[in-house]
Length: 337
Image (cartoon, rainbow, N blue to C red; front, side, top):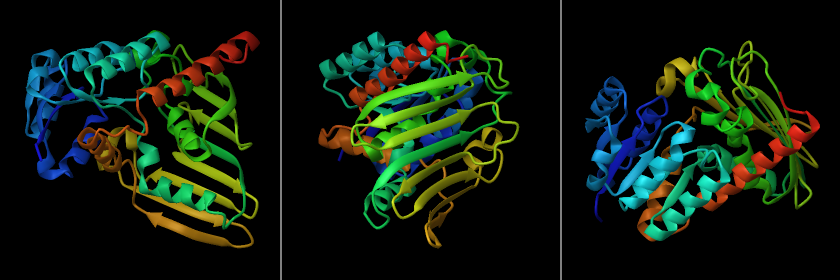
């Protein structure tokens, strides 16, 4: 099997998580270079990867066959097009793009190049989410009829720069980060009938909403609710999803045991799944956190087999379409910020 040559475009906070996942693939992959316009960041991340640093990713595209695109949202479109033009497979950090027109151009470019195009929604690939889905749909606790998810984050100090502007972020928290919950709901409950949202500003200095809630009706009758804030006075439960079934509540929690924003990849985690019915049953207790390994493994499986990623460009386009439609309805009703 040929060794995949990787270029990492973007050396920011999320890059070490991808590097750790790539390291687990051993001889199947080799990180050739890391590119970031900030030279010091490119050099630091490249040193960690055992790769060469670049300040312009375009200088290295001819040397790789797979690009990991980890740049701000408004740059997803031009960078991805450059990668496909160079004949690379692309793993792109979510969201797909900041407009549907750009999304369509990116999907078409990947199809023309006949390359794998995957958008990174890591949670559905995590073993704990796999177990959660199996548990709530397995029938032991009866029919699933509601999903309720919360992400509670204190990011006031970090919602700056490109994150603070609608033009570069693409919207607010619902567009940028709530899809971590939405994608898992879609993975569990399937196609949706309708989605609406409300939003406000709770204390961060951004143009879009820093706090949002959404209500979803799935075609199979299940309803979903998401709640998400970047302005929490203190993060209590970083990620939780509760499935209400006929016979029990099944609850997943994933909590950093330190300061995730500061510690990043070094932060320890606690992930639990419990079922609460007539009695409480602990289904899972583990240290699983933001492990991108299953997601990255899925990407390379698709590259090598020609298979379609679960979270490909088409699926990722539907995500942003739904959020944009929810924004449109909220704007008409004065329901957002």
